Length: 415
Image 1: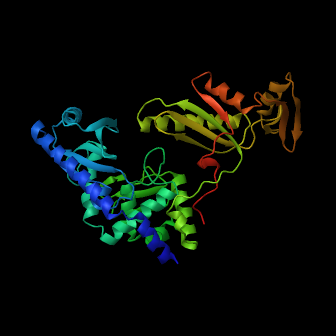
Image 2: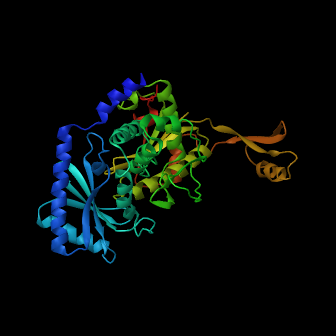
Image 3: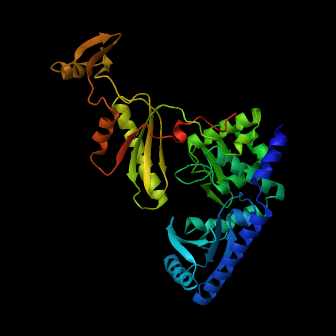
């Protein structure tokens, strides 16, 4: 049964010959333009196509291509980006600048996005100047070792990870990058062998390396980058993402299904949900996701402190107009009184607890078991009161029970 599922899934993840031609045409066109720019601007660099499109590990429908301008030391990245931007304007190609560790240019051509990333040429073992400098070494390492069959297995694994929601190293996902996905297939040999290994993974106890190394990392998953032994290629993978992958691998091997390769219909479960909607700050994605994940965690702690039980929470954004903090709750309203637990009677801190409430409107202090308790009035009984007390009067809106997204849906892929 598993062989039949994989055969059918392979058809789903293999681009058509027409898609292949389109990608090749766009890629060749961009490389030709960039080669002209390099010569005319006198930039000491070469142009190379890297990433999944260069290694035939991209998925159908993918509309992005990675082209690198590999510079020699001495070139200034910002000046190079400025020169390239001016040249693109002259030749009539639509572009905009994005920022990661340093600026790069994204071209818009025939509904494709082509990222043109400047980096410095380095040798294996040499310390990179920017994070992008490793990319040519990554490409060389993988392209020399991945077989044609394994490239198909990479596509299967990417789609599997994408369906279960853990594909991508961005802070939004905290999951598995394309490079890491390819390393796993290369290391274990095939898609099925990856899953068989993953179901035995244990967080903080899984260490994968292609070469002997003594380097230690404290992370749920450690995969030593074969071109840089000082880097964990799985550093972005969160405990939740790793554990989701383990569960999905275990369930797929027990009960194979195409649902792990096709987006399923979302069936919403009616429960109590609060959305706090902010206007998008128009900052780079990594900055925005990091900022609102931190705010979301802080607000989660505060909501819990107010006495509300949070089942799960998350951050969502269209990366254009809004950012949402979403909380799935047990209740939206609470009673006026709450039980407040104090210290054990034999602890010296019991004096401070008793004296704090002697003159207050409380029931107690009284003893139950070995501890002192009081029943006191809640500060907030409505969830909106709790939230606004923490956020103040900023530019945001609170929506109650309007959310219908992934945080309140039945899992569409699990079997």
